[in-house]
Amino acid sequence: MVVKNVKISTVAVNAQGAHQQLGLTIEWTLANIGRIKANNCCVVTTGDYGSFSTERGVTQTVQARSTHWRTWFWELQYPIYPEMETSFNVMCYVTTRMWQPAGGKREDFVQPPAPGIAEQCIEAIVISWKLFADSAPPKSGRRTLGEMGVRTVSWLPRR
Image 1 (cartoon, one colour):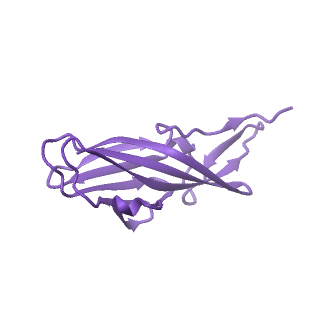
Image 2 (cartoon, one colour; image 1 turned 180 degrees about the vertical axis):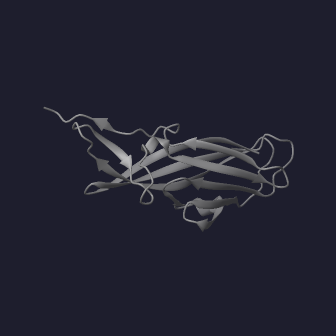
Image 3 (cartoon, helix red, strand yellow; image 1 turned 90 degrees about the horizontal axis):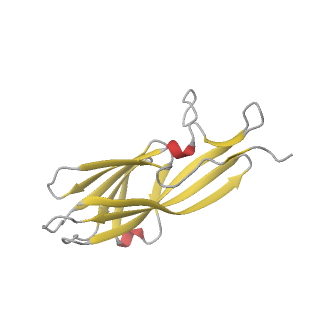
């Protein structure tokens, strides 16, 4: 079993004053590249900022369980046969705020998760995963939102 692809399929923005909540629909594609059917398969996702939740209809493919708002377990409901692929969507929510540094340049930065933690550009947020399939050793991976196509918006005011 491998995580074949992790991509953002849709982005929704809910702006409230200086804050924005980005709702990212992340599509996961798993593939059984082995010769044996995978009866039990689970993907554990962890984000260094933001929170995960299920998308409507996701329960038909996976059962979601959470131990923490940043860590979710996505257990596939059905076996995956050799050469078979399956996909499911996960929602990731990230709150950003508009930040105006000296000099008038305006950029979107992620709100710090706690006092004293430095702000970071939204594309630097990391989503990590571990893939468990039957008794095989787990496979790990990670991808930043920037690698999935999310970009910080940066511009100078028009004169």
